[in-house]
Image (cartoon, rainbow, N blue to C red; front, side):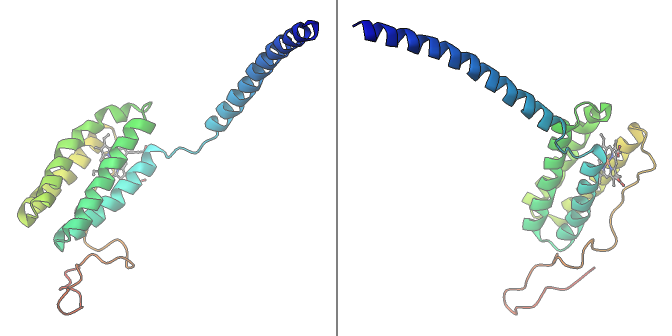
Length: 173
Ligand code: HEC
């Protein structure tokens, strides 16, 4: 009985000690995580824009070739980048204006869903104009985007594979 009491007391003390140790250990972990976080790479506003530029380019050729699955992919990549700007570039005042692009992204998205080339072309041009409106509004008027003339990469297929012949459909690029 005596031994049991001593043991309980000892355990209690040990528990107190471990609690303190655990708190210290946690604090150390928090400190090291904070340090890691401060050194974590975060893409800059311009890097998100460069990514958007590529998808904006590919989107055009996907739509031009009525490759609607690819076009759907590209428009959503742009949307994700816009979301990421809002999430990771909160401190930039320009981010407050980014929502202005959403309606034009939605209309391109609708054109893609409808597989409607005419609607795609006109909504793409409105989208591009909106990109430039924001560049003007944020003091980056010299960054002018336009409808691309050539495919951005030679190692990606934008035309749809023709299932009957196994050859690619006609090229317009
Ligand atoms: C918030 C409004 C806003 C919208 C909407 C916007 N941009 Fe930008 N864009 C900026 C800002 C601000 C910069 C300059 C970023 C920096 O500080 O590096 C920029 C830079 C760029 C650049 C230059 C990147 C470089 O390093 O050369 C390109 C290209 C670009 N944007 C493309 C687009 C395209 C394409 C769209 C539309 C799909 C678009 N932007 C929509 C604000 C916007």
